[in-house]
Length: 267
Length: 94
Image 1 (cartoon, rainbow over the protein chains, first blue to last red):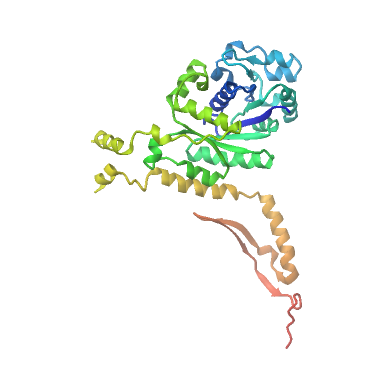
Image 2: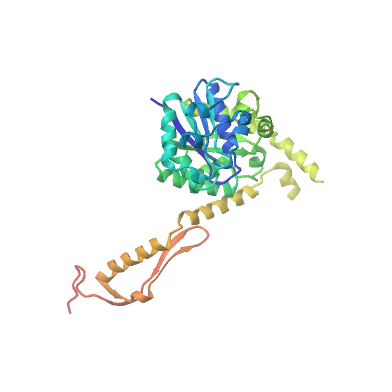
């Protein structure tokens, strides 16, 4: 059968690709799937620190491709969750160290042993993106409710479509329900309206994201927070389960009370 | 009146609406980005079709994408020297 290979991408940097990859990978593993997260950001690796596995990295996938080590020597096993692995990127190499064919071959080599292969894609639309996307069948596009992020997502979606990736699904990250309610932030409908790809989940802005990255522990492993719940839901939807969207308004302070507070704060 | 509105909500013109409109316009333009090569190919093929029916001044053809706030239009300005007789099914007799 073999693993489903999914690339997490966005075009724009800093919208939460690595956070999403780490948390979805951990969540899928928590649901009993065997998962490997590949850091495809050669030269600017960060998935290792977000997952808290940086001290255990010995080899990386470039070493595997160049024959410096065997594949299972480069895989870092996460000891906190069964069946979760990281395949790190090289930090002292550039994106030119690999080509798309080698990435495809690497994924093929991993497929028989896993249920899911998640590829954390670098920002941009150049070589690094093309390498990461080459090996994948499906894509998750991460955007935030801001014009630059949505614009870049639109561009990346066009490229993924022309590469034949399917399904291509959208994660709206860092949404602030309060601001949407006040009409000061792009709402999910606005974004879905222009991007016209299916939504797989909305992750609210949440301080836990920073805290969990500080601690090197994906939120979906333990912390109970709105963002963790959102990522757990996304993982379930990837597995094909029908999970309703979270009620984000519940996380917004109630509208009327908040407006009274805001009113007095201004004076 | 303004403070009542801010008190009871009904913020119909928040910056989110502005963002939505700006995003839409940006994407309309991005999606119709056309390479000079493609525009040149289009011009050549159009000339081929048009010259079957009329003599045109090929040196003065203007072909461009016209973008305004809401939409994008392909605008062609083709000076016609004369219509070729008997080029269509319609035959002029006098």
